[in-house]
Length: 349
Image 1 (tube, rainbow, N blue to C red):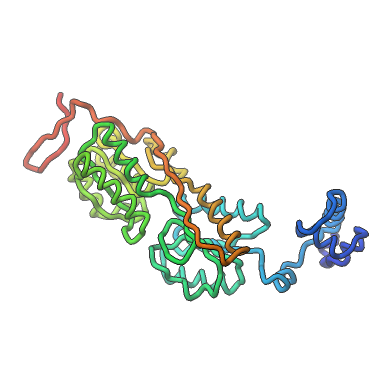
Image 2: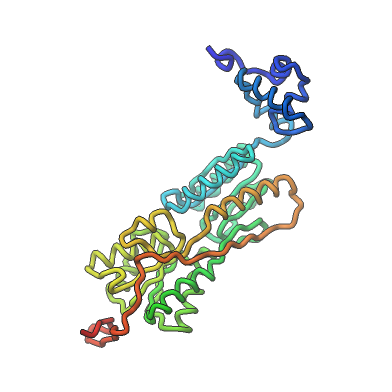
């Protein structure tokens, strides 16, 4: 039977076994203080042999910190968020910090309950990916440091990407390949980042080509009837989707109707989730630097915990076009044909 199965080894007992003071033992196990490398290594070796574990409750009572942060996200079924969560956990772990994750499932009520519970559990800080651009939890925080991801809320440190640039890159790529009649399926427009993507793409299309249509959708591959209707009746030669999940849904619907992608309609997404390159055809998309954003969120939160009076920060990451197989050039032989059913794209034989 191990020592830990019998009883918890105290810091005082560890110090006695290592032949050092309690202060030196504390410095070693907490990675603090001034100790020689050999002394620190000796203490840690004895700690491992004795299966010493720090008493986190006692430490929290002494320092006022629990060594844990919260991560609140809107939808863990979206592959974007598990990727984000994993990087947050790995980054926090390197700093000796644990992470509690809450999935709000797109519910504002669940969002409030999750944040309230995490604050009651004594987290040192919160990384929050809000459902929409509304501060639903401010009164619940009780001074807890918060970093906001993706959204644009005042009063918090913000970690974002250049969503407008992403919309422009998507539109410019299609225009450069000869597409002029382009449709846009936006994400939910109550989210600032979705509006930025859509507005930039639509603005570029109107300046350089022709906006076939624009319709709002959920961040889901299961398309609303309004989206399938415009796809079925569309004269667009290409579609820009506000997220990869939407783009995959668009491709799936077009293929179900016998429309070739990219032979007849090109499709481009946004986010570069892991599914993007596994889709058939592999999805051209705008890459969101999710790992870099997650690292920045953790580092910004830990800095805010240490220095609560520092000025608020807004960190904006670049995005990039990832070219894959779902987008093709529009042949110079393509033409617009007019029939009784409206305007459709055809090819000259």
